[in-house]
Amino acid sequence: MTRLRHRPALDVRVEIRGELPREDAEYARTQAVELISALGPDTHAARVRVTRLRHRALTRPAVVQGSVELDGVGRVRVQLAAATVREAVDVALGTLAGRAARLREQGHIGLAAAYQSAYCPQYVPRPLAERRIVRHKTVVPALRTPDQAVCELLALDHTFHLFVDALTGQDSVVHRAPVDGGLRLVRAHSAARFGGSELPLTESPYPAPRLDPAEAARRLWLTCWPFVFHTDPDGGRGRVLYRRYDGHYGLLRPEGPTGPEGPQAPAGPEV
Image 1 (cartoon, rainbow, N blue to C red):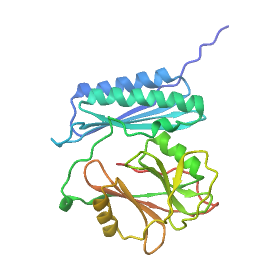
Image 2 (cartoon, rainbow, N blue to C red):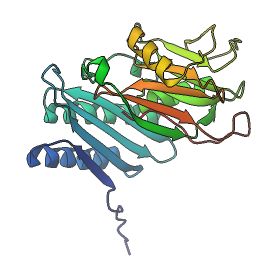
Image 3 (spheres, rainbow, N blue to C red):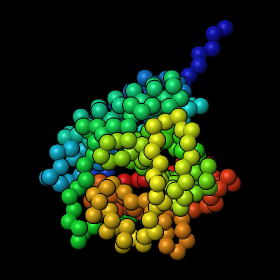
Image 4 (tube, rainbow, N blue to C red):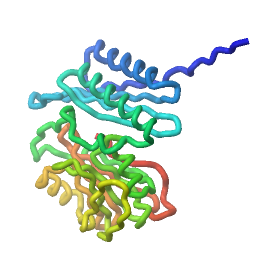
């Protein structure tokens, strides 16, 4: 007697931010269901967030963030933008499918993900006087080696990745350099160098600066960087002030212990 095995109901969630035609929202959900079906039974929890930024200076106002969970491998995520919602959905979910396949086959995304895409989201050009820290997020950074942190950075398609360095026990950040897309490591306090990385990862010779939020915001404005990693002048923990695509700022703060006894949950920005 043959028993049919049925796949559990697909876990697909689509979040819409801003006003969108119903047809575009339905298109996003349909494409997400097709993606998770095509990737196979070990793929779960597809998440799609569609945002349409309202500013006439933007040539790519439709932003789509998509992610899936792969059994035994982990989470893979992309965030891309285009002129229309349907184009952004197609580009983002198509890229997500390719990265999910690479993650499943190789166990990592690879350095091919560390590039500035022609579909990278744009920042709303908000006047400096109007910019505010509109999101305060507290996270429990993962305990990782720099190489592990880079692999998560690429898999999650983040600009930066905050973690506790397993080599030094310090709050640290790996990120893609805005100019050349290279990989960089900055630690909160120590500028000591530790060789042996299997990746082309450049370590900063300087520790993170000690800044209060106002000073960090000023440096963010002066450098035009997407974020500023700095330490809290009071507690000494590493923090990240970052630019949001709506033109405002977000502040990422760590909590929990540092060092080898630290926690194991990854942390990244939400913009």
